[in-house]
Picture 1: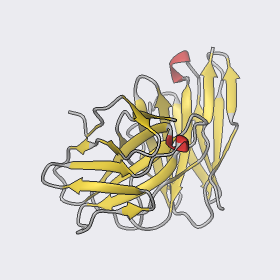
Picture 2: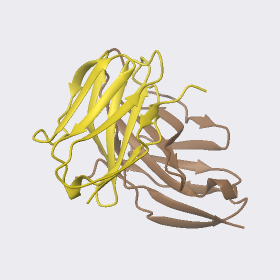
Picture 3: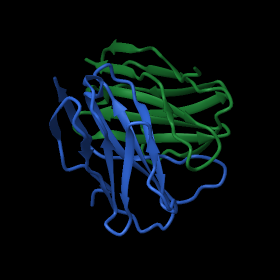
Picture 4: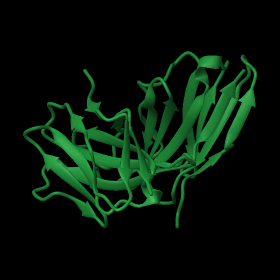
Length: 114
Length: 118
């Protein structure tokens, strides 16, 4: 079964450090999403790409977060500098062509900022 | 206003009983899609079922069915013959608009924590 792969699975770091999360979407999927899950806010869409071009990043704090897709097999989400309020589970998801296609989620990166 | 409302924070159900998880949505777009995902305690998000706004019939996938009432803007998930392994968080989500070329971002509800008791 094809899967979305996210690394690292867990990350603990100190406030102010740069954090980079990586995602390998399912081969052939043309849309890649980043979501964040917290107890308070639930699941929120941060940004997404179609055919590697950014489509919407309105959910992402622009001052410290950046998302890129350097090639079709890699999406990255960076936080610099990190803050304790960024502690959350970050999910990457990918979907094939077609508006009714389900998004396939990775297992998430559990991020703790001390 | 909440776009997706799940009014049941938690539910306890006896094994083998049917379960209905409520979801209401709010959109003015005539074209939208509704999704249900399951999140077990291990944390992964598992797609269960999809209903499009123009679909004439309620979606079904194995033990899962979607009770879609468009006029009421509700899309309740029904799980028949519940099993212990169904214990998990369940999220309703919506995609608004019709996008050429691919999927769009989802808006999620807060979820329902379902516990199946033996």
